[in-house]
Length: 210
Image (cartoon, rainbow, N blue to C red; front, side, top):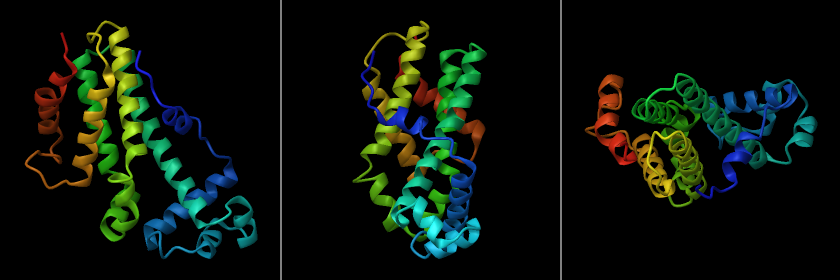
């Protein structure tokens, strides 16, 4: 079995938050969407969260800690959404091809549909782009290990031949991230039916389905 890093289980185990913390993170997310990260103050988050500034600072030592907490929750929620689709396909005993297509479509849709990511890429790219490019190893690691876990399960079920899943998983993760960051492409990203056909013709074969 592939040797996976520890980041994926850490993200999965990061929540859920208690009601008070969730309220603060909700307030921070809405403020980030309205004003951007740089223009959002701790005062604004405290006001939206209905708590004193002192209480906010007791929970988060500074703005960077709050930003990291929001990012971690966004990541966990993304993984949970993909998990739900993967689990549903597994329960249906769908073919490897169908499961791969659904995973790819869900993975890509989750990246391209994230409001905060879209907001930052449009208005504050200098904040988010380093963490998705030259400093993007953790993001690639998460995607790679998730996909490797998926491949190993299909291998254990006899739906895929046995091979080292990590290189393929990383290639797919990098492809999905690139498509999310640079949507200008001849690939029809906004036409789901055509995108599914693209996945069947170009993504599925790379998994070496028997």
